[in-house]
Image (cartoon, rainbow, N blue to C red; front, side, top):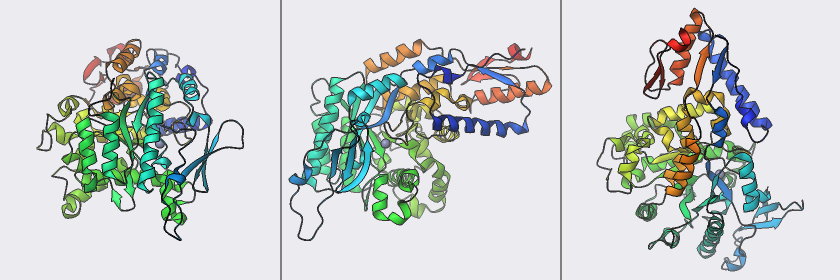
Length: 512
Ligand SMILES: [Zn+2]
């Protein structure tokens, strides 16, 4: 059988591939090919039905940042500091000298970063969303504006100003933007008050345009997310059914030790994933998710380093329960990540609690969600294994737009274009990550569901077919390739092809 010409998904891209992302994809594919050396695989062609349609799947980018073009004069609102003490270094925005609308962000008197108009201007963002196929952005503030260490009064004013700014954009463009609120977490009472101001009760007329909150991985040097003083916040999130997005604060690390974190972009490349891992370790080991079964928490950057540390942390839980398992009520870190303890219906799971029963029916019922920002399809495959059956339903598209460490310019490019992803994810699963899962996580409602379903209906998401040239070795290759196609569900017999649990073909169509 003659190979069929490969359709290059890059051709379907609305924008030209960028240097970095193309290089990464190429390298990954090379690695995968090298791993296949144990089994001779002849020249093969993989074709997907309507692969170019994948670029038209409904996309919700859960992880984007936005800020206003100016801030309240926070310094003037700050009580005088004690004599000799340095004033608090409030963030400050100044027009850059470039003249192109970019803004220089300062923290106190120290330059932090320059941002372009796409960081504050909704029109520029929509233009870029249209160019890259993103339908909806979930807006959250830039983490340097959390200011959890700031004096409380102005910090409350800042949080309200940022939330009102995001709310106004979401109200102006309800089909393109939904929002995550920020909270003045240095004071839990003030945070809960802001939560109720935005989400109810009673709920704002027409429902809140805010759909969740974004918080940092820690509050200050001494306060992690398992601190008991945060319990009223978690209870309020359960009460209002508000999902939580946790984002690391990498910029804070050089303040702690510049020699360790200040070089080679270390605080962003290594520190941020480690911070996220520490936060996930604290939340799971601290028993927060067990005490608050209605919480849904999504972690940025694919959960940072936590998935890679799971084996180690689980071993710690098993071998030193006196250190690790004190607050976990018997639920280990692996079970938390999989959500498998909720499927078992343990005592921590109250089915009356805010859709837990419904969540069990999809995604394994897990409370831990992650975004897709991993930059590596091999890591995505590993993470999906660790999340277990239904795990793909707890991953949401996240790009970190508009910042350069994100999946920019095109959120979701890896999922749509990287050939190796089809080894372990169906198009239905990918469609969910691109948009459907965020609708469930944020409870966006029927209108968003209809937009998602309409787009999905127009796409043939049938799994890729494999066509292999004839010969004995080639038949082995069919088994190998089809085995990989069916993922980690059923073991394929010789020549069989499964899509999920469904036998799609006995292989005779390509072997005969
Ligand atoms: Zn981010």
